[in-house]
Amino acid sequence: MPAPLYQLVYYSRNAVSRDGAGFEAEVASILAASRRNNEAAGVTGTLLFNAGVFAQVLEGPLDAVEATFERIQQDDRHGDVSLLALEPIAQRSFSGWAMGFVGRSAENTARFAEVGLSSGFDPAALGGQKVHAILRDLTVEEEAAAA
Ligand SMILES: Cc1cc2nc3c(=O)[nH]c(=O)nc-3n(C[C@H](O)[C@H](O)[C@H](O)COP(=O)(O)O)c2cc1C
Image (cartoon, rainbow, N blue to C red; front, side, top):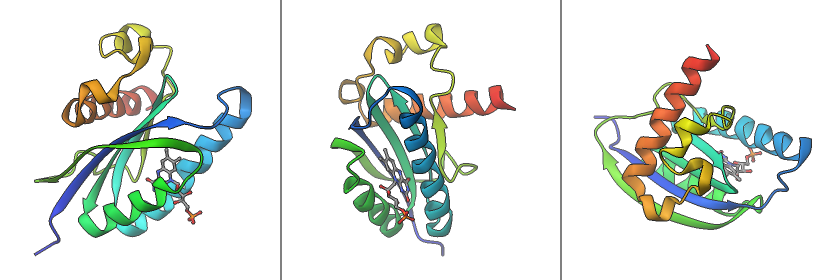
């Protein structure tokens, strides 16, 4: 039997300057490392950046999810890492994504306003399930828009 799947949801405060090319280069480097490592570890998920906040979903076998999260927490490109949820799941929500990214269509204010993403995304108030649902919808949407 394959190892049971778990899902972890957290958010954190961005510690990288958001001006100019520096931020984009940092995000590109985070995504490149994530995709390489997560694929090897059997971890999938997605990463959102908005309003100074990162929110991320990681899913996979518990030991792989925990080892990945341990490493992420040590990263000084963000701070105040807050765990919203860690729970067993029946199936992956991001099976196609070693690490998806939501951020490219941040100008899509009408869509984002609905969930407070343009006015100030507040993952603590939303809770793990809501953050997971928002990230899943946005990741699928961005993928469709990019295609
Ligand atoms: C917001 C954020 C999310 C990250 N997500 C992941 C991730 O999903 N997987 C991963 O391996 N590294 C992730 N990282 C990067 C790790 O902190 C670390 O830099 C990386 O795993 C090191 O990989 P390397 O030793 O292969 O260079 C993330 C970093 C930040 C700041």
